[in-house]
Image (cartoon, rainbow, N blue to C red; front, side, top):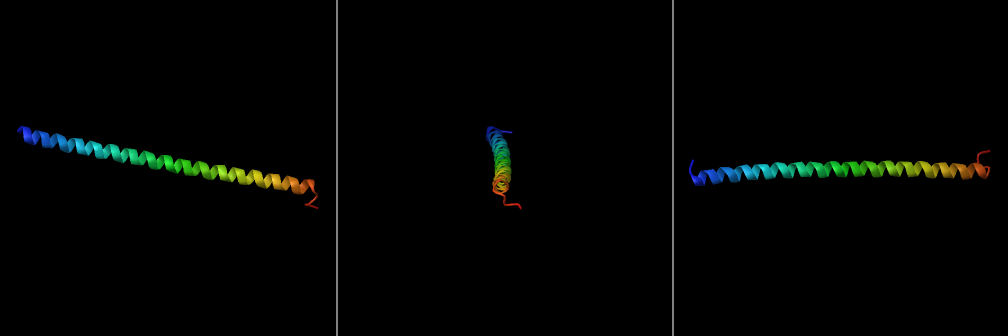
Length: 66
């Protein structure tokens, strides 16, 4: 293998490694985005439940459930 072939081979390896790293970073970013989405959904559900509980408490205090 002459120097030109060796350099081409190494360039190909470097390109493949860069593509693999990029793919891994994209997967990590996608996983982080999905996790953030799920966290936001859970927080929203908790807030909705707390608001419903507060509304029920006010209704009970005002005698709305008679």
